[in-house]
Length: 177
Figure 1 (cartoon, rainbow, N blue to C red):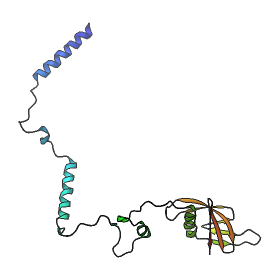
Figure 2 (spheres, one colour):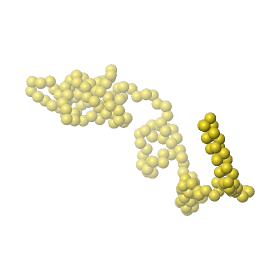
Figure 3 (cartoon, rainbow, N blue to C red):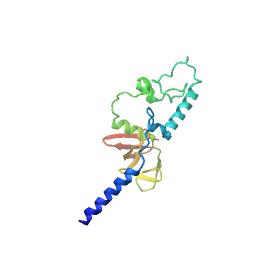
Figure 4 (cartoon, helix red, strand yellow):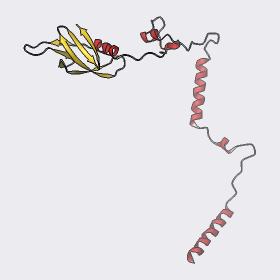
């Protein structure tokens, strides 16, 4: 019973305090309470950006034609288009649907980009030097495709004279120095 009496006293005290407090100030009709808040930093920043853009573009000649958005904006005028752009034939230099690259073409591109030297040791099988390592027939070399930056494992199939035959999957390609 003591707990219920205590709760009743607390409720009465809260009611008396609320009755003594002044009523909340009402905003004047037609004025929102949000109008009295300071502007947000984002709104202020957007206004600054808009003002800056207006200043930049006010000097633009309105009679000049707009840029052609189908062209590559990163192409330097007077410089021939890259091979990718020349092959595409589509507006804007976008590559259209093309047949997937064959394994033989990929191997030819990677193998022809490799630089290597020949290592000859008396009484040992011929070897080639690539980077800081030497490789003999049958070993695998990890090569990076210069076009896609992907890595492939090329098998050294045959070293004969001044030529090396590389293999990738079922394809073979011979590089002669």
